[in-house]
Image (cartoon, rainbow, N blue to C red; front, side, top):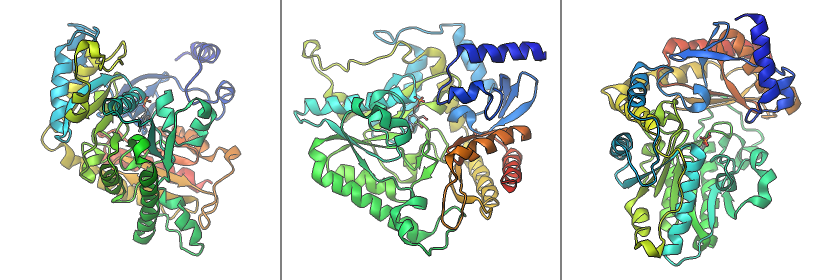
Length: 467
Ligand SMILES: Cc1ncc(COP(=O)(O)O)c(C=O)c1O
């Protein structure tokens, strides 16, 4: 593109736009880089306005599932545009939403019987929290609090922030938030147990050491149990991101943690909300993360990949136990008074229908396993690097935690912006990744090839060697 036009566009962006999760003082000063303007995309590649292509290694913030401009999804949306692009879902319905609910219920565990639509991950969570809260009113029990984990991220609306456990994002809003109990995050790499083991030889490779994992699990689950023992009568629901606290530097839970958490909720009669906004639709190697530990929650929150990353859509799936509690005569006002203007947008539902058809097709998940194995093998190549403290991965998601001192796990001074700088350098290799502090996040579209995975790891290796 002509440099003058490009400069005008960038100037206009800087003059008029406030970007999310962005320090705008850095953005307007081109720190660490001049804004990149994306013009188009195809498959796993994004193209900037100069035609340079980049692998979309974070799946456009964890939404893109089957590549950009996927011909089948494109076709489904275009076909729906010729019928109707949007109509209200309050008092009306439409074919795409009806079909999508059938398909979703056919792939969710069979305890789920109803689909409530909204339009983003935060609202899917908000809906579940409000439903759980209202459910207990019908049971004449005063349960006004929730249980979640430190380091949890469930979105940016006030309910979702109340159960969020990331101090950096959430502590500023403390006085606005409702009461919540927080249990420890199963962050094995940095858990108390590990800190006590001063002489423990830290293995960067996947940090799969069984003893450490089991001690972390035991310590963390004990706290969940203690909180539930003392407070279960006040707790409407417990919420968890199954297997991966993705927004908190990709904290992968030790095997068995999720099952124990779910079992405790059942035991203490506390409803369970599984937030699979990030992990749903194949990212863990199975359709849903909860399938790895075979649990049956009361609520499932879904969004992001549900439309292949094309159009906002979200779902809160519930059991009949929850749904039936809201049934009653009109004048009893047991109605769930919640809904959004773009609820169940038909274009989004058309995309969702196509996505599920593709995922259910023949060998999709078998082929995905081969890709995940390749990804694991490639990630392991980075583990001996002096500044790689810990590599965490699950399915096509991974976090590479960069540290100043591998022996002690000491982090870099945040002023140095190491993570951001590495991601910026990767653009020169034609790769878009995003850091969470000093953890480099890889969140791959399921259609990425082994060759493209190798390209990302090679580029990362080159940049890590320059530290
Ligand atoms: C687990 C989880 N829940 C909820 C959300 C919020 O989704 P949204 O950004 O669509 O509101 C996110 C976003 O990253 C997430 O990872």
